[in-house]
Image 1: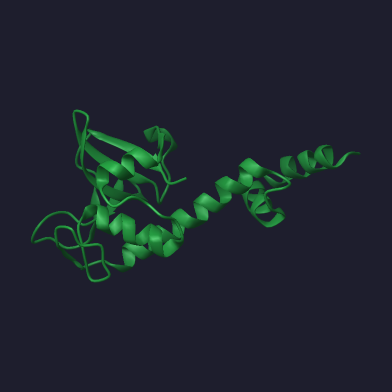
Image 2: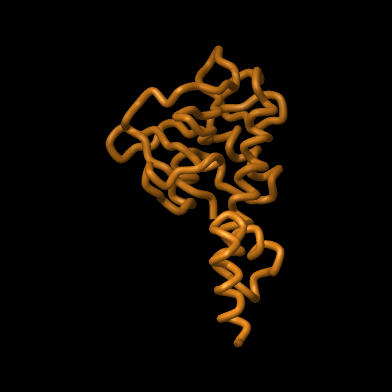
Length: 157
């Protein structure tokens, strides 16, 4: 049995989540696409934990941590600490990520609030319809339900 055929049989028995783990462990040479997905999921999970650890930090326009944040400053800081570089502003972040449908969103994906084609706010998807974000002047980093239908989703590459 050839290596790809043997690997396919193993992956069928392991299941999708285990396949992602196997791909991450086996390395990019075996299953490049699955390895990249596993790495992105790990980075997003780390970034989400970092954002959550900043609960209560004060909002400050233009701030990117470690003690104060604006919305895009929180996502910028969290992904940077997790090992991925993002642009600094919400609009630039939207332009740099892979756009995904609501049905494909997972924890650690970015949630972009928009008015027409203008992105005005960003947070990190935490699951169950909630985001971690730095909301506005006078506010603090917090977990909050997504309050608008005018959102787009993105996954950091």
